Amino acid sequence: MVLPLAVSLLSCASAGSSNGEEVAEPRELETVRYGYVRVEGREWMAVELADTPVKRARGFMFRRVEPGEAMLFPFAVSALHSIWMKNCLVPLDVIWIGEDGTVVHIEENLPICEPDRPCPGYRPLQKARFVLELAAHQARRQGIELGTHLEMEIPEDN
Image (tube, rainbow, N blue to C red):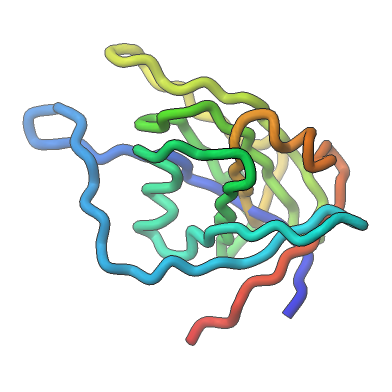
């Protein structure tokens, strides 16, 4: 099934302990699912799907994201889905995509949060249905900019 790409994201969210220290959220035994995204006229790119609340909350938290790795956050409705870089180990590009697959907002090379400092949040200026996270500098390399139309293929739930 090919659908227009629109993404929304809660990236690198953190869990806290009762004493206020940051703790890694344990990974549940969920199946990792993949979909595909492409910019018009380019090859399909495999993307990990953050398709459950736990996966969306975790995002790329505590992971080293390499060029070529990507995560797609599909949401049930379009909204001003915000993200932050808490517990991310590397900078990321974050792309918000509208219902029709058009890129509506991009934040490039978002820095990781510094320890003991407030971690800023990021959100689009208009509603988005999907969010796509890539390693820093990959959005430009993939030809993704404001107004770019993306296609995606997401497997049906079993």
